[in-house]
Each structure stands twice: as structure tokens, then as C-alpha cells.
Amino acid sequence: QVLLVESGGGLVQAGGSLRLSCAASERTTGYYPMGWFRQAPGKEREFVAAISSSGANTLYADSVKGRFTISRGNIKNTVYLQMNSLKPEDAAVYYCAARSLLVVAAKSTPSDYSYWGQGTQVTVSS
Image 1 (cartoon, rainbow, N blue to C red):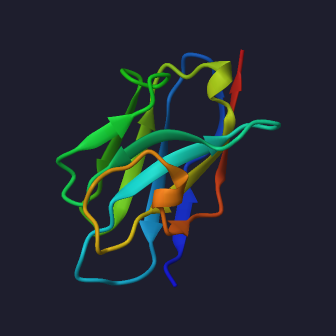
Image 2: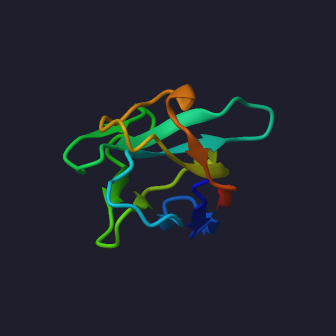
């Protein structure tokens, strides 16, 4: 079982920035395609960003394009989400997710992901 541990959430003013981190606990020889999703109270979980196993390809939700950047860290199976120009509507619990080691592509659908973190809260004050 792969454990994903997120960190970096918190309270920020509108227009500010946060960087979320996610690390996979399992030591492997491969790289997981990974993604970020978020869920606000009363809403369904929605896609935010994803990155392929190599890091060469990324996907973004239209609502965060140009403001958020997903990247892979130097430590294997670590991924970051840099969030700039935050808006009150970005407030949510953010979840890190990883796909199977058998695939390489970035995907935007929750059902494409096999492993999920516990979530980290992002609050944006107006």
C-alpha cells in the first residue's frame, strides 16, 4: 500500500501564494504519474493538476491555468503544487493522488488514480 503525505496547506489572503507538497512513502524503482484534486464543502471532488511519470507532460484545470504549477521534486515520487494569485474560490481540501506504476500519462479523472493522500486544507481569505 502506498501512502501519500501532503503538507503545505494553510490560511492565506486572496492574491497570496502557497506551495503544497506530496511525497509517496513507498520506495520504488519507478515513477508514479501524480495529480492534485480539491474538494470544497458541499461540492464534488474536482481535478486541479496532473503530471506524467517523467514530468514532461502536465494537465491543468481551466480554473487554475496560469496561476498554479505542478512539478516533480528531486526526491523520487515527490510532487509540488505552487499556487499563486489565490482566490477565495480556491479554498478547499487539496488531495494528492498517484496512478499505478504501470502507466505513465497524466490524467484528470479521479477514477484513474489508485492512491490518495489524506488531504490538506487551503483557506483563502478575501
